[in-house]
Length: 68
Image (cartoon, rainbow, N blue to C red):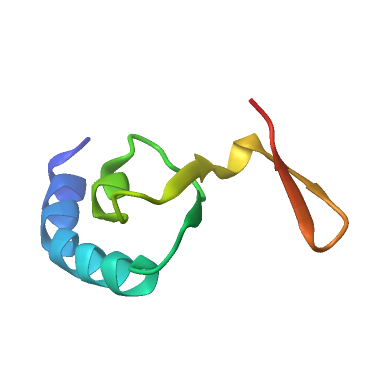
């Protein structure tokens, strides 16, 4: 990662942490879009089930199935 991106990530980390914690505090299931290196995973509730969007196959508009 280049220096500019490292600086950006360092500045954004507290904002991302606050946003993710507030929006997922009661979540039981979370789909992470673009998980990358997983830097955001540390902010999710400890008991939440988190999966990468690439592992979801959608059936219809209301059902999803986790593909291992």
